[in-house]
Each structure stands twice: as C-alpha cells, then as structure tokens.
Amino acid sequence: PVQCGTCGRVYSVGDPEEEASHQRIHQGRMDKLKLVTAWKNERVVGQFSEGRVLCVKPGDHQSHWRKVEEVLSVVDTDLGFSEVGIRWPDKTKVFMFVADKKVVGLL
Image 1: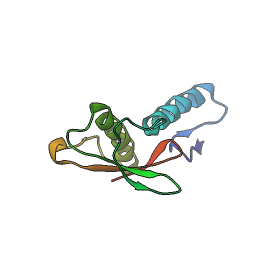
Image 2: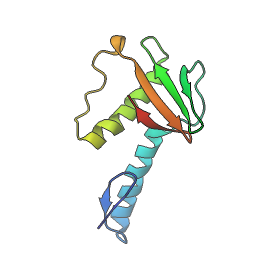
Image 3: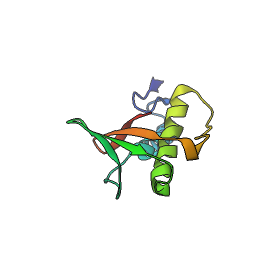
Image 4: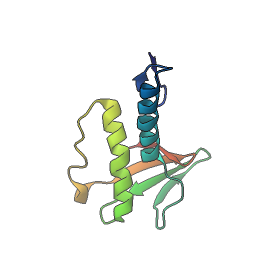
C-alpha cells in the first residue's frame, strides 16, 4: 500500500478498485479546494506575489459561504474533527488564502 501525499488516502497500486476509489476521493477533495475564477464582489484583504487573502463576512453571498463550508470540511477531516461546520455564522469572519486557483489556507 501507498499513501497519497496530496489527499492522504492509503491504497494499493495495481488494484483497479482501490485506484478508482482513490481517484474519486482525491478528485473530490481537490474540487472542494478549487477557486478557479475570482468571485464577483470578493473582498480581497491582502495581495501577495504568491496569492491573495479573501475575507468572507456575515451577509456575504451564499456561494461564498458554501465554498467556506467545503474548505472547512477538508480542514476538519485533516485535523480529525467530526464535521461541525460554522457554529455562529452571523458572528463569523473567515479568511482564505488563495494561490494557483485553489484555497491553500483558512482561518
């Protein structure tokens, strides 16, 4: 067995079922982190040569909050938390670092 350095999935190379399962999980994880185009009305709070920092606040568009929830689910899984989501969305501000068309940091 090998462990994917990107998604963390352990699978057996050469086993078609396990490779297919890994591919689905891997792609699903990567899709959650994608941010291909800039959002209309995105709030850029930092611009760097490597990427930009976006802030999502209460009242922002639902699509922004859906992306936050998707990214948070990946972070929660990586940290071993059960998915709780955002407890107080009306009081929560989220910062995402976006580089190479994907979210690579979340606070």
